[in-house]
Structures are given as C-alpha cells and as structure tokens.
Length: 348
Ligand SMILES: Cc1cc2nc3c(=O)[nH]c(=O)nc-3n(C[C@H](O)[C@H](O)[C@H](O)COP(=O)(O)OP(=O)(O)OC[C@H]3O[C@@H](n4cnc5c(N)ncnc54)[C@H](O)[C@@H]3O)c2cc1C
Ligand code: SF4
Image (cartoon, rainbow, N blue to C red; front, side, top):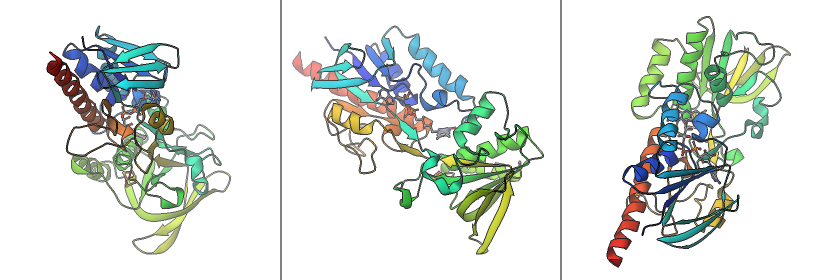
C-alpha cells in the first residue's frame, strides 16, 4: 500500500499541494513549524492581496480551512523534520516532536524569509520609528487600525515608499528581484490614499516591474489615486527629530533631492528561508547559489530536486507570487504522485 505524502510548510504552496493530493484520495501529512497554517500572508498579517483584491485572511483562510477539514490530511503544527532517510516510496521523516512519519515522497514548501531592513542601516529602519516595512503597513491596514505614524499615532500627510529594499542590491549580497514588491507597493499606495485622501504618497524606484497584467495596478495608482513616482537613487534616510528625510539623486533630471516625509516605508524583498542550510542537509538536496532550494530542471519533472522522491514548490525556490506558488504546489504534487503511482503499478 502507498505510504502518505509528506508536505513540509503550510503556506499557499503547501496548502495547494496537500489539497490536490488529498482530493484524489491520497493520504497526506502536512508539517508546519509555526503554530498555525497559512504561510506569510497569514503569519505576517497581509491586508488585501494583489492582483485579486481579496483580503488575505479570507482568500488564504479558505485554503487553510479546506485542508484542516479534509479527513485525508493530518496536520502537525509546531514541528520540523530533523532526520530524513530511505528511498522513493519508502522514506522515514523524524520530527522535532519525536514522531516518525513514513512517507512515499516529500514536497518542500518551506517558503522564504522577509528581508530584515536593519541590514540596510543607512535607510533608517530600526533607527527612526517612522521608518517601517511593507509588512508593518500591511498589518496596520489588516488590523483595522489604519496607517499611522508609529512615533506619535498621527495620520501621515506625506509617505514615501522605497522600492528594492533587500533586492537587486549587490552590496548586501542580494542580487535577485523579489518580483512582487513593485505591485504590492502600488497597491499599498492606493490603500493609503483611499484611507487618507489628504496624504501624498511617493514611490521611489529604480525600475518599475509590475510584470504582466499587474501593470494595470501601476497605471491605476497614478491615474485614479494620484500616486507620484520618482526615479531615484537613495543615499540615506535621516531625521530632523520629527520628519524623516529621504536624500538621494533624481536620476531623470540628475539633481540631488532631499524631501521630508511623515513616514518612510521599505518595500522589503524575499530572502531565502533562514532554515535552508539545515533543510538542504537534512533532506540531502542541493541549494541554488543564492541560497534558495534548487530545482533540478526547468521544463522536465516539475518541482524535482537533486534527490529523487523529494520535490520543491513555491517561494522556497526563489521569489514567487501566491498564484504561482499555488500552481507550483499543484505541479509538484502531480510529479510526486506520478512517480509513486508509476512505481507501485510497475511492482504489481
Ligand atoms: C510584503 C509582502 C506582500 C506580499 N503580498 C503579496 C500579494 O498581495 N500577492 C501575491 O501574489 N504575493 C504576495 N507576496 C508574496 C507571498 O508572500 C508569497 O508568494 C507566498 O507567501 C509564497 O507562498 P509559499 O507557500 O511558497 O511560502 P510561505 O508563505 O513563506 O509559506 C512557507 C511556510 O513554511 C513554513 N516553514 C518554513 N520553514 C519550515 C521548516 N523548516 N519546517 C516546517 N515548516 C516550515 C513557514 O512557517 C510557512 O508557513 C507578498 C510578499 C511580501 C514580502
Ligand atoms: S519587484 Fe520591484 S521593488 Fe521588488 S525587487 Fe523587483 S524591481 Fe525592486
């Protein structure tokens, strides 16, 4: 009899992989290290998602619900895999809580870690209270408290959003584009304008990468909500004791600019999961040279890693959107199922 499938990580990719296998009658064990499912959109309290405009708690909450209600899926929260041995069709995973899970294949959906802006100290995060990250603004909106200056609780009248914080930055060893932060920032700028119509919102950018259909959000932010875009290189963020001051160069007119704001928002990027070295050693799989979990090929077996029987999906492989993470979760589930079912049929 086929052993269950083991999914590691209960974010959008892991929830999709678990649901698709369970919905065709396969047994699944889903292991999540935090004490609740949902991944970054739930754990970090995102507000409305792009591109759908649905609240994260509703859209991803529904994915969590259908997994927790499915009798074919056993969920273990607050656990990680500490040992993994065996071969395709007959693996054993030992968990940090002492359980051992026999499984026929594993899918790693362990996601990413948000860039910590203290690693970009010249841009003021951690030094000035009114310099915050996009996740903090998502939480202000999703909690219903609204966007307020952390220093004094006032409604901001001028907000700057700085793009590419912790992405496309060779100086701090992060060469990749995090793919979604331009679109998330354009959406966030519109949310701020909707809540606070008197607040002026500026987006400082190197390039705008609202790829594919997401370009609509870029245009809407300018035409409907009057968000202003400044092409600039930021040198530093300082403070006069009240305002936070963004200094840099306007790269279109090639002039230095110094502009005071009530709040500055860092559009933080997607780092490799801090657990990836450990995951790579426990599961015996290769890492991409930037630290993400490496996919064995691009166009062949979707989600294959360097170890047969171990698959990967979602932002564990590199910066990904939610919809692409879900698609990859489903694709990896199909790859794992085909390998396991194909093997058991050959044995009959
Ligand atoms: C500020 C911000 C806003 C965003 N907004 C959007 C948006 O509106 N729309 C959109 O499409 N994308 C958005 N994204 C991207 C989105 O967060 C990702 O696409 C999505 O979270 C990827 O899902 P995932 O399942 O691959 O990974 P994650 O959401 O990171 O889930 C991974 C899960 O694995 C668990 N885990 C990690 N390590 C282990 C381990 N060792 N053992 C067990 N479990 C583990 C984690 O706790 C987590 O639950 C945003 C990103 C940022 C930074
Ligand atoms: S998506 Fe935009 S903000 Fe994010 S890293 Fe790429 S260019 Fe920078």
